[in-house]
Image (tube, rainbow, N blue to C red; front, top):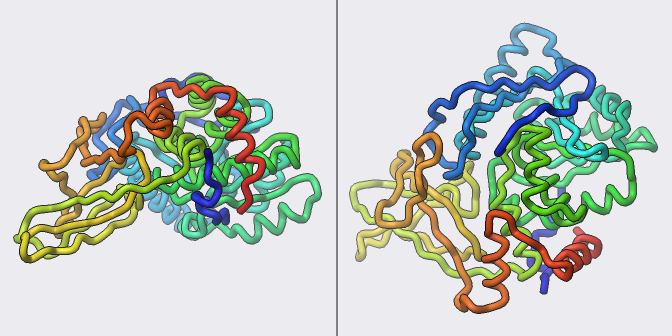
Length: 378
């Protein structure tokens, strides 16, 4: 049974590499030996090389100073992306929009930067531009989304849609993905043609949305969809978030209480990052004077959550709690697994199956997901 009311209503939300399909000038992929990524949060899984995303120079900065500022912003964004996603990924915004055909009717790419990018997409048959960026993403790189939307909407043969998902936040991706894919599914049925799905760099949120759409709607096996996606575009979709989101549709979102603690009276502040708020945010813990311990009480839906403590500004793991295996850069996080009280329940069986390496949907489950996607409303 799925519970539509359990999902957020707001919608304003590589295992291998081979030769890709390119549009106009080529998308350039540079591969280098792995180096240590910045210290911080992120998944314990990682890729084996550095992916450098470079696009066509369709919107080159007009001055050297502007180019330098964009380069600095790209470098900072890439460092944040690397720390949050557990793979060394680089995005060069100053080189323009880049994209790859995953299927003849489905493209995954980076963000549009000017109204001229709408013309580029119209020229290759795009009928739906599906933007997953939040306003803060657009403001960071100075993208005038209002101008892009006005220009796109001046044509009758293309539609620009926004369905926001928070960047670098696997939990927000999990929560919003059902409603986002519902909106995508309806748009594709309505507009036909080629669909362009994008986030900022086109390496996380957009690939995840495309993979979920292929798995839920187009009937691909999970592993087949992932293999096709990453063979066409080097990217790093959060697979666990998609699997958990699939289980959420089938079972609903039941929350369980969780208690996390940091035992110390030699610090002034203790916070947690990751968990269900993403690596870009922090939750303060409350200090219990009697127990001399910092405590966080939180209710979380079933699933596995990675997190890290920030003690007086320093990122630390709590050795008294569960710790992940080191990722490719040697970094570890704490983690907690929230499970159903009854391990023999139908919900537990579904979540266990969806958490496998290659989750399989029955024909009845595919029908249930399709019904949800077609009837859900923002």
